[in-house]
Image 1: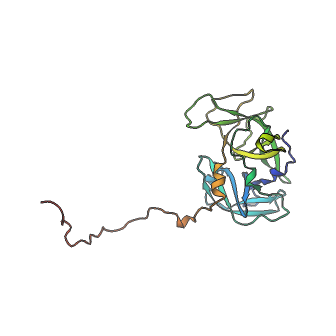
Image 2 (image 1 turned 180 degrees about the vertical axis):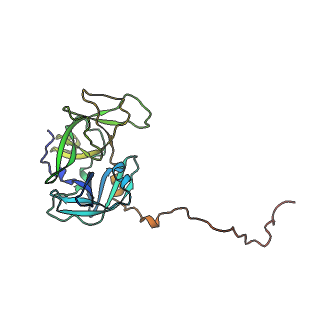
Length: 253
């Protein structure tokens, strides 16, 4: 199998934009559904600097329809941002959430063809483009307490190309022994800047570290509590009252 730009699974990738006029692209967000619950996943570092700013998810790539982003929260893995939607995605639009069964539990693609699905802004709106990649385990050491999976482009690309927040899809071949009678397309990670720049497993430089999507399983089961309901330390004013009749009672002489 080869990365297919017409794969229907890619319709889960949508533009995340500011609500200013004209809308400015923040990055790609990938929508995943479990029954009626839908969340998005992207890089936390794309939305963190825009905390409090109104953002929206474009549902028609010509920019004519969007739904607001209600909120977002940090995932378990550093770099993961889970997006809560402020409304349902209408039928017939250019964005269709991916079923949770098409989320791969492993970042490793085991040699299957893989590609980033990127969102680009054009004069006519937005477009999805595929960037084929190799996925390699980082065996070069480093300070990380977990094994990294790194993405290198298959073909030479602009060194400034940005894959942050972009989902990495894998085109898995049939594997009857695993119950996979037909090939399938799964999302296995999102891209995050590879700042170490130590490893170079391929001829082309690494363009991104791949972050796992374990957080989606938790986010799609239970919605996070509203911010005002989360347990937080409150302020204490004044002195602490001691209601005992004798504060020294019980102490040895």
